[in-house]
Length: 223
Image 1 (cartoon, rainbow, N blue to C red):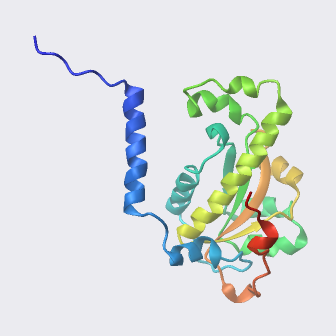
Image 2 (spheres, rainbow, N blue to C red; image 1 turned 180 degrees about the vertical axis):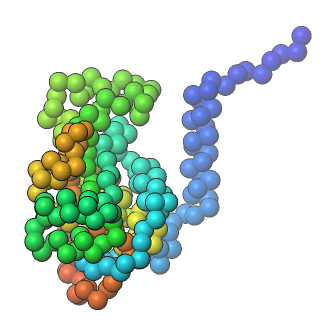
Image 3 (cartoon, one colour; image 1 turned 90 degrees about the horizontal axis):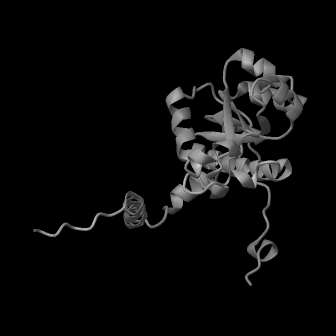
């Protein structure tokens, strides 16, 4: 009889493919070029005025799918995104905003509500299938909320970087009532708003000089 080759378990095969994919990615592009880094962070700006150039549904889908690949603790992925674009939605959102932010929001083609789902951890059998982590959250609402807020904030940061990478401009906002936003948009599902982000193609006319940042020596230690 001819000896059969050993069968590789599916999980081991998938792991090997994942490792090969990362090596191939690094071989294709070891780092971003300086111009790309400038676009997403180094020279990027928060914007306050907007053109009327629209943002398509396809672009919003691309933006979410890129954002969703960013890492979160135990792959919890608690962030949820609501894209407010039509006038009726903008009217509802305006009820929650401080007066100085209303015109900024109305002028933006899209305002994203970055929120989080308090029941995110109930999906861990799908998102973290190799080990049951739901008992870590069951009966521990403070821990569940802390994890959700931290990781949805991370996902909001990925969202802004991804938007810039796709050629969009962003303007994050926190001058609003979370309670009113939650009443207006999440009464039926219990999601909780984190922050808002205007999205589109900016008019740079409203920009002012960049504010200072801390130096490495002021903000960092190597130990």
